[in-house]
Amino acid sequence: GDEVLTVSGDTCQILAVGGTGNTDRVVYTTSTVLGVTRKLQINITTVQPSLDIDSWSEVLAFTTSTGGGPPPIVYDWTSPSIAASIDLSGGANAISAWAVGTTGYIGRSNDDFVIIDASSSTNPITVATLGLVGDPEDIVVSGNYAYVASDDDAGELKVIDITTSSTPSVAATIDLAGTGDGRGVSVKGNRLY
Image (cartoon, rainbow, N blue to C red; front, side, top):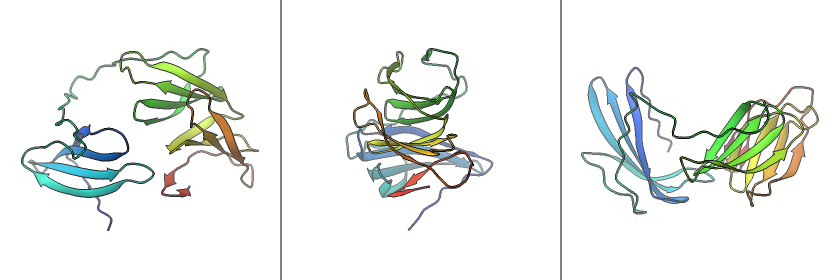
């Protein structure tokens, strides 16, 4: 069944995600509720296209994931700093963003869809820019496709093939009834909302 972790008025932190790729990952979290701190270790079988949790448990100490991931890194969030930034050409603002692993996807107010390689956390680089019709208001990525909600009245949803990140292309455009703009998009399993 579905499990829900709700924290209200206290804290919950994801300390680290162990493993690499789409399978055999582990998420390490701590939460403090009413002054009691709990450590949870969540073992994930598959990340995409839907999150499949193998098991989770409260633990006294964290272990490595089945995929050989690292023990958790404890981050100090009291004084965050910017590790890197990227200045995209032109004066257009970023209005939407999505990330998968070390790849970032940015929608800009000049109708651009930009793919960023952030594998070097101190030196992100632009991999590709694809001009769209309409501002990309929201982005979600699932598998080899980016789904973009757009303010284009003749194509509120754009499906972008990102199989080869250096050459993204529009695979489909969907014109929804009426004149309302696409403002948000979400993927759950094989459903697009």
